[in-house]
Length: 321
View (spheres, one colour):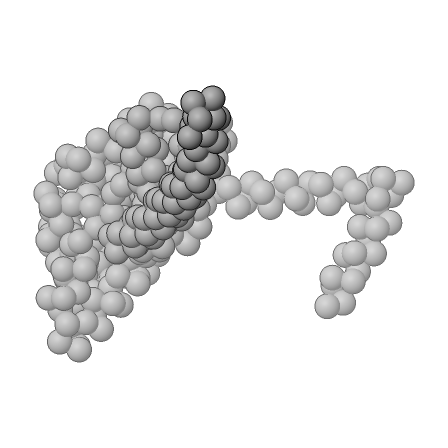
């Protein structure tokens, strides 16, 4: 080949070599792109699998609230970038709150309160005989820790049941096991258990709550066997669990309730040994409310222009019924 043609030939060969090499580089680039895509897809699949496994673990451990909160928690974590400890704390905090709510609802259901009354609702000004400081001390629930008792004495309608329920409700919210019953129902259930051969099981039931509220002792007489059954419940709980007991009868007349002074003395001995006595006097809330409604009604009748005609008409219809 002529010398002058050699550089041109080499340049032509180099260009040809480069032209041939370029497609190989493009193929390597395509393979690299496919590899990156596959790697991303693999990571996505693995991430999804891990998420499903995590949900499964939470469900298996019965951490249902945490499992439900997981998607929102992960989304928030993507933005806030919390540490591992903080993320786990936030997720479990949801589960703990849900568990507390479920347990509170369960304790309230098992307590069997006939109504929900709080200490904040109690009108201390209407019942000045109630020692507010003493009630505030009972509201600390220290008496439950000490396995002591509360005896609320007073005529019907002065707020004994309301105070007993309010203290019981506060105990439930504090995490204690509480059960409410009337004295008549307690005696009926223990008598039935004795007849059906379930005495020991029933005694374990009455001994179970940390606080047992026994309402309305003294409204009905408890002769013989009934008194013995109540004594058994109180005796088994003595220094093992607290009792709040309400009664309309003074301590001196308990022999009349049980028709047996010996049983009455034995019950009082165990109740009063570690007890706070709330003596409540005054008018009945129900009678006071009745008088207030009656006064309002009379005021309406005396002022026809302010609704008296309606009141007369309403009274006439009520009488007809």
